[in-house]
Length: 205
Image (cartoon, rainbow, N blue to C red):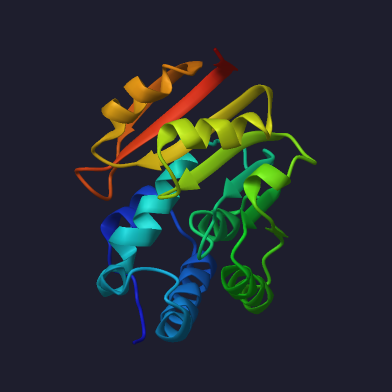
């Protein structure tokens, strides 16, 4: 399947250049090809990847305004949202995952699209070498677990940006039993059930 974009939010609101648009199309075509062998993303999501993947990921740029910020995408999977952020122009990105096949895919994409990203093959709890300005994650774990992971990689001004679903309020209640944090929530523009939570001032109780 060959992809082309038509989603108005991608073309207007996020002001993708022709060059960026081409790279995203190339990424989706590579993802579609690899997914036949390695099941990197749910097959049904590739019927409308603009909505399920690209629009879902690219909305993070409304939160992380400085493209030079030190950002890590934990449990990046097929490189989402990290690869999309790299294509958009973020220059200090790390993508971390423990799955070797997914890491191989990300390395291939980075080489094919000439992306400058730091690719880390590790379990999150085993990687404690750096602290980041932003920690992002998508469809990785419940909030309580995400906060544990984030605590290993955070300095005192780190912000966490997590793409979550409709059960976020329940996850917040559960997480507050073990963590103190400030947060804001925005509705996802890609899915009416989706929400984006931004967290700072994280402390363990």
